[in-house]
Figure 1 (tube, one colour):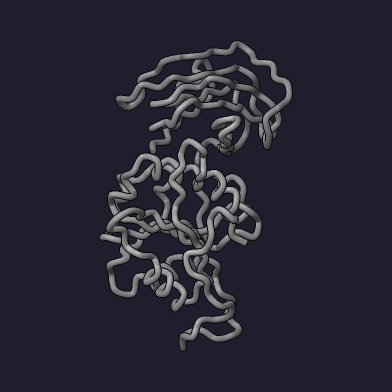
Figure 2 (cartoon, one colour; figure 1 turned 60 degrees about the vertical axis):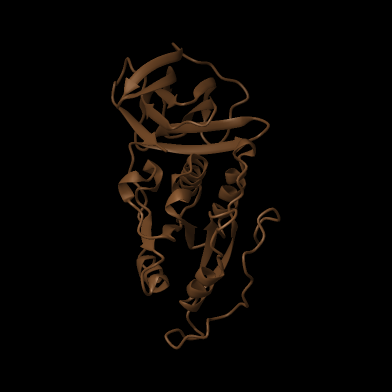
Length: 285
């Protein structure tokens, strides 16, 4: 069920939609619609909800909760990442909505949660309400999302067709989980996608790491021992300045490096300890 803070955009009866192309035996795909537009002049979601419903989706959804200081996006991410989460996550907005830094960061973090915590991640669809979106301008973690122009004829059928094959899990040299709460802040949990690392490093542009730890993956350790730690390391990568922490602890398949970030980063870099391997991956928001 949807979280109590999120509520439904529009409730629909269960069962197959009244459309000739679908039969009563066809299982409906579940879809969660996140509606970004808000304020005066914002378009209403009902026509989009109705079109998706008529094309075979069991639609639920809610407006985006714009409370970045409370990490409201983490609450939605936890809901969508549950084992019984939706088959499809649609984020609908105008160009101005997808340009909002808080929207960009929050939706990208939810994408990271879905990749890390769902055995079968849902399809992610970005629905441009005022025209097609430019993939090159999207956050790194949303680069593999399906882009659909809501102004195009039959857009809802295009969503259905695009989400028919199984989703493709992004291939990165690292794994990353994220956890956030207004009481304990924003933590990134990173490690190698395969094999082991001889140490790890996490840095941020527009934010700074203020705590770090090493322990078993899946949750912050009660105690930690950091080997040859570096703190407040400044790096220039791609024209941006990053502040990073690093350790030389071995990070294997069941280990993780945890870093807390103070502030909302515009980009994050992840890699091994710089004395071991100078190559890093950069996630831009």
